[in-house]
Image (cartoon, rainbow, N blue to C red; front, side, top):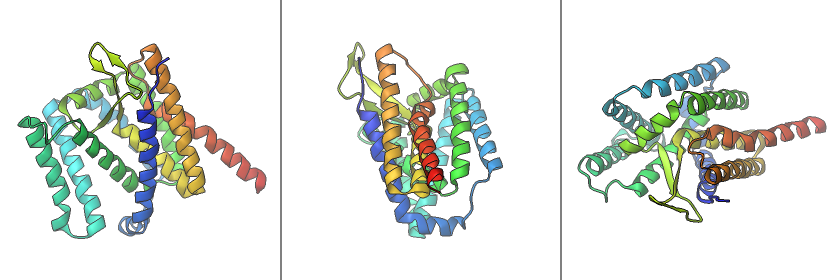
Length: 274
């Protein structure tokens, strides 16, 4: 049996960081977003749009895909920086640094500027920013709906259309910060070298969102319990993947299997006490 500790532990730490950052900037986010929240129809449209977008990206030229994500990441970093600093001339610095590092590191092939460590660092930054920003717009009800719909869409796109797999391969070739890539711990060596495992930015957002909403709804202790549950579930599924040579499996399903049972038990206990 082969297993990996790196990704599950990374997921656990990342979710805790997301909650910490949210607590730090909760007041300012609510002020900027003016207490706006996603409605049920917004969630349905969001998941449909995500599914369509994944399918479209399969046929989009690599250059166009790269420009699209560079623009999206730049807007995200500028927006969050402006929320924190409220100064536009400071807020342009983070996206500028990101674009310069990517351009000179990838196109000029300067490894010191863009390598696996730098790429992973930006994936972590973007995962935290996206989750904290969008997580402020979710309620407990819309989170549950989003989790169900997104998991269904992910299953279709990974196991049936396989569009998600194709997009992941393109993203890896373009060296875009859309996939965290970590070596398996304990190390596993193959004919190609050290075994690496990756998890998409969307899956990182998903687990962070579930942990954050658990914190908002039930507090710190249950949030930590739910994060442990998601990490444990991911560990079990990843062990099966490594042991039986499964190359791709829906990350959302691996995550929600550790979150949903705990939520059901929590709600049943809350009702029995009320």
